[in-house]
Image (cartoon, rainbow, N blue to C red):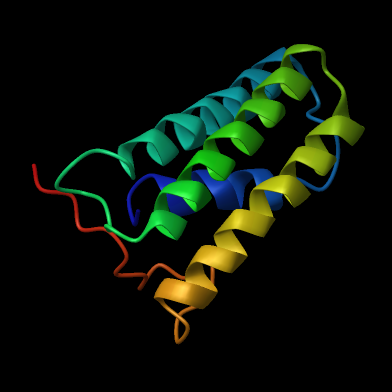
Length: 116
């Protein structure tokens, strides 16, 4: 969560204008793809919470991050912004339920400590 999910979500939320060139589009695509994959990691046994809502939020995050990848692939900045809003929803709801004292985007989030 700390090393992958939060930084990549923040990269999408913090984009203020369309990427200026192809390299910039590719950079944000990497963030969106990593976010989608990190959501899947939240479902891996041993890294998951057994509450069914946890899985629902993780799946919603993966789906909304995929929307961001799709928007980037067609270079549609408006759709990318919409995907960012869609990403925000499961993050906000999950943090409200599982870490109410820590907001989304907060690098102190203890939701998942990866066991490497």
